[in-house]
Amino acid sequence: MPFFPDVSRREFLKLSALLTGAIAVPQIANAAGKEADPAVKIGYLPITDGSPLLIAHANKLFEAEGLIAEKPRLFRSWSQIAEAFMAGQINVAHLLSPITVWARYGSKFPARITAWNHMAGSALTVANEIDSVKELGGKKVAIPFWYSIHNVVLQMILRKEGLKIVTAPKDKLAEDEVALIVMAPADMGPALAQKSIAGFIVAEPFNAAAELKGIGKIARFTSDVWNNHACCVVFQHQKDLDERPQWSQKVINAIVKAQFWMRDHRSETAAILAEDGANKYTPFPKATLDRVLSPNADLDKLYAKSGANIHKNWNNTRIDFQPYPFPSYTKALIKALRETKVEGANEFLKDLDPDFVAGDLVDARFTRKAIESLGGLKAFGIKDGWEREEAIEA
View 1 (tube, rainbow, N blue to C red):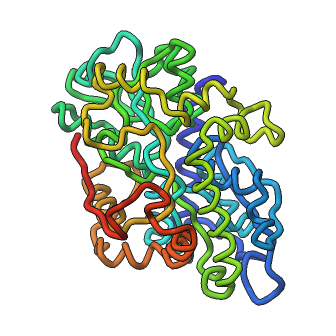
View 2: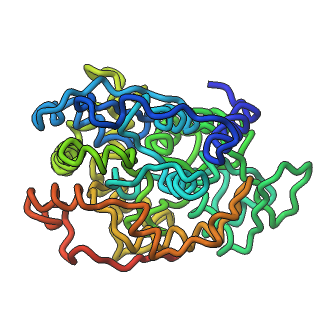
């Protein structure tokens, strides 16, 4: 797929208009109200971040809860999926966690996070000739969106190396400047191969695909900067949560059970999501998805040696699954976003209280109940209870 920077910029501006109320958004129809419970209508992008929603559909976990679920609808951009969600065309979506902050507080859109889709699952990939982050100075690096954990973490990495972030187009970069550009994930690999960019930071399996095709290498995993961070989250309409609590609980039950199943069925998950799977959820071969989903001790040693993972005592699983939305993460995210350069207006962030946002943006009651029904957090490998401390170190 060719690299179209102008298209990516237009997508950002389109979503910016949606989330700042610059254009009229249709009222939600059939997504909430007192009529009969709607079908589960999932929207997703073809990345591993959306896996729990897809596995819940594939394994008929929604039906097991007594729900009707339509086939998940694939979108190609964040603006498309956000627009469909805001118009009520879908009622369960996975969105980048910072986008949900923008949606609820930048545009006052009535929706909340109900669960995490995964932990980790992203990386900074660079051209093969680049041997250190410092060598990105004077070059361009692609991000999937300004409001993304990828942008947040990348800027942490660059600042540690004394590099300056440039967000607006510039004819010539200084040796200590790195230009960030928004690019669709599918365009990143080809752009790296064509030397249009020096690296990209994005969700899997695009990093794994670049490795396997020999066009790039992992410079750093995002989870080695922010241990067990969330990336994409489950976003649902406020009215559904308030007026359809039983329906909402069943939706979350299915998603939580999907994550529980996936933890012990990594290779099976890859097969279901692969391009030759029955539902053709993603355009990736099983081998690429396996590289992300299935543990590989030999690769782990290579990543430790290369510096892609430097924190030996952290969870170095390439992608992990646990659905509970820890409040400490949301608080830390708000603080981090204030220090992150973005294009467009972000004035709304300065007045946000992290403690307030942790309770207002996130509705954890359904996920906590679903987790408790499976035996508690220990079923997801967590032994320290419902609170945690964030570990962040670039």
